[in-house]
Each structure stands twice: as C-alpha cells, then as structure tokens.
Length: 195
Image (cartoon, rainbow, N blue to C red):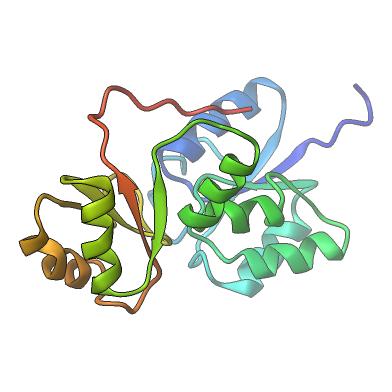
C-alpha cells in the first residue's frame, strides 16, 4: 500500500464527482477537481479546485501536474487532450480510447454488438429518407437519437408516425450532427455500472 498513487484529479465537480470524492477521501486520496462552477456540488469536499472550463487545455494540464491519476465524471469533455496526456505518461481512467467510444452512441452500440451484447436494433441515419425507411422497418414508435452530446433523455426524439420525421430530424440538429435510430422498447429501468 505504500506505493499507491494518492493524488486524484477529477474533471467535473457535479453530483457524480461528489460521490467519487466521498469514496476517494475514505481511501485517503488528495483530490483536485476541475470545474467551471465555483460552488459546484463537490467544492466543499476537495483539497483543490481549479476553476476553469472543461475544454481549457491549460487547466487540464495543470490538473494533470497535480495528479497521479485523472478521471472524469461525464463523457462530454475533450478526449484529444487526455490522449496527449496519456501519451506523455499520465494515467487516465477510463482511458481516452474508451472515452472516444462512449462519446458516440453509434460507435458504442456497434462495439457492444460485436461482443454479442443484446440490445435494441439500431441504424445509422443520414437523411430524412433514412428515417422514413426505418419507420417501415422498425414500425412506430421508434427513437431518433443524436450520436453525440446527448444525456439524460436530451438528444432523443420519439417518432410516433411518418408525419413526425421532419420534426425529429430538425429537433436533433437538422443533419448538423450524426444521428441514429433505435427500435423502441418501453422503459423499465436503467442500470449504471461503476468499476
């Protein structure tokens, strides 16, 4: 136990960051967070708080200097700077490679499918014609999703009929961001795994 790294850097000081910090403190970690909000939920628990935007590369490098290991509480951050830091020898978990996968729902689901993980059928969408065709294949309703940037239901549109295709397409950026469709299943529960 003497050689264990004890300086943890966390990008994000929201509720998930706060829960990580509570456990890290029980294990004796010195914790530094990077969060733009001075009084974010985790601010009272940390040893140091770097107040900066999540995309501030200088601030992320400062966090890296102060930390043995870096992690993050959410995936909407720049993976490229973390990849640079990893290449420079910094320990980052989950890895920047994993981050890039989870930042794109289509890429993530494709990887899960390659490993035979059961899930709803899904398809890449590029045009409104693709959405109309998916309605014929999946039936209605089905989910139209942004591949990137969505969370907690944001970036989703339930398409109930062909008359809503254009509404859904426009609500999710009108072709400016990558989209996917997913066969609809009634929501029963959501499971998150922290390891």
